[in-house]
Image 1: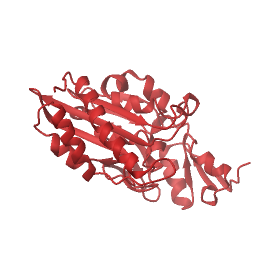
Image 2: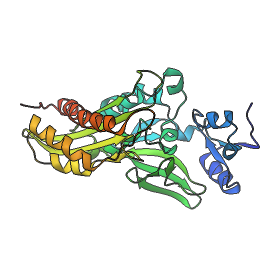
Image 3: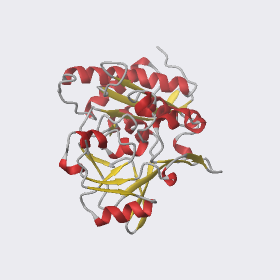
Image 4: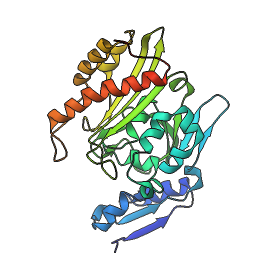
Length: 293
């Protein structure tokens, strides 16, 4: 039994924005995998619902003539996993989508909902960070665009204001072409478990060296984070085990994991160091390179 006081079914994104402006207590319902749990527990903050789950303008994956990819925020994770554009150009996103919960959840959970929930454990956050997704957001004043970097502002918080709806994710071709990418999720159980640590890496190589890497971690800080010190430690360095060790050492300056009932801080730091090296090596292979001794 759900204790819903007000329910509105949005007929369009513009209608959803208007409904949100009419009711400052309203919450969006997309896939419902998080919101329905709150309703089940009779959370009073979820008694006013604006339903956007079947809006066609929020669904789908497209690519224009210049190679820019657009993914609607209401696209499900099953759709991401199966779409050839995502498989070919955004493999780290496809890999992260494939380890979200089980197939029943992936069939209904949406990319936008996973990001807007604001959880540091959101599996799609790290690949979104390394691909530097640009977010298309509908507002009462029109459409605005903002980077995924900085969108997470705290535990369970994102940079959306009253009446705003995340419409789509945009990926520029220069952020995925001629690069290798990989993602890995460490969880205590293989299925239906929240991430203990999540990691995504994007790398570009040049003559046996790292031209650039982009490294992101989830559950390593209050929000998903890019690792600036680790990225700087890789720039221009040779593809060697020594370089991997230096990057793994530098990443400690970028993260601040905590102890929880899922894992001790010391264990998470060990995982972060280990995954840094492992996932970078996978990304290097995807880019056609090889780590040398």
